[in-house]
Image (cartoon, rainbow, N blue to C red; front, side):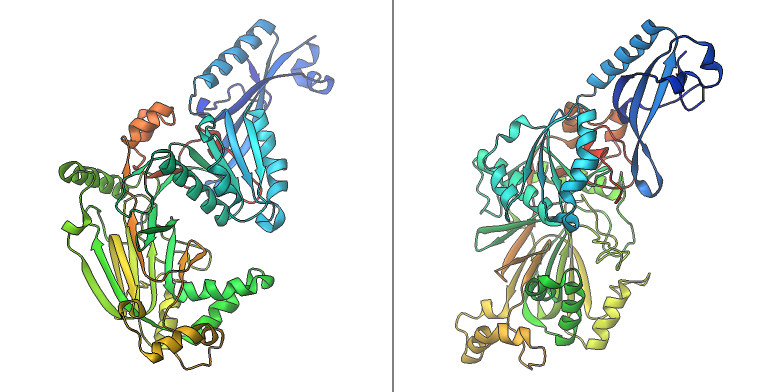
Length: 503
């Protein structure tokens, strides 16, 4: 039996976590170790694989096996390579987009030093595009032959991911003749996987579409924020020279300004989902709520038809003055807010959590913000409401008035001046929507979860060879399969294998 170079008799490595198998030349120093000293010649091969480390991270490793029999060694190499060939989900050709300014201008270096050698080791061919301007990746995806690739890899921040996501979804709708400007259109699913560097487990994500007056604006996968978070983003865009500190500065400035915005929210409750925004049930790999919600949604679509009109269902309307209006598809947890904006939001339950923060005192709003940093319930305030919705619409007070009075016109004209000077006592009429870190020009929007015509997720995964039957039973359905760092899971495709020192 082959011996392990680590000194042990047996080394167990799952086939799904093997990157490559290569014949190895043993140098003289290796041959003269311990009991192998008397042997004239040894034959060896090395297995390169990934292993799970602490904090849900992947680490690359290797183990070398040797034996005296050359024929036996070759048999092992051939058998392992045949097993790897049977893993049909493994990508053979990838399209890579690199933002040279991402990661403190380290994106290109990280890819070349950490990722490219791994792709080469796994015999994956790549076409690399270095982005030169905003929306370069998005525009390029409308031009290239995306169907020859097994996946798209983006090296950069959330902006690069957003570009790739918009490019892939938009390209699929264009090729299928789907009008993205129609909020009620049944969109076609894109089966091309997205890899993010650094990456880990494959996790599904809900995607929301944002429209204004039957015109498509953006897709959102994390946060839609109006008021407080929109104002922070708008102000920080003018202070990019400050670097990351601009968000702290703009946040403090926005808090002092304490602007509120008047308008109307209309929403449809997500009746197909299990759980509620305040049940403290966090979303994890194999999430029960995501699986049950998707199953119930599929049953509703089957009963009413995929093109079931939203107008047939009840809309709930709320009018008021708001400091912040936030809609999240995930918890949006971060180091400063360990639980996130909505701790019980789920990645793939087909709904969003709508959070309304009504006008209140600065002190009360500060209490609300502080709740995000501890274990207390941030929704336990009389001026905060949270709903789990499948779609919603927002119309500002100015948009509702067909004929604005002179004061409104003046506020609209001098709104930017008032925004730049918190000491001004005027209240700005409209805020800006923060859509996954990008501003939207329109304040009146319509948001809905994507209604994708697709075959069952498990069937799709099995057809690609992504997971075994047992593994797919633990995976919820999703709109798009996004490979991200997560908790648990396997590394059956190389997107899940890529690791860097930053993880």
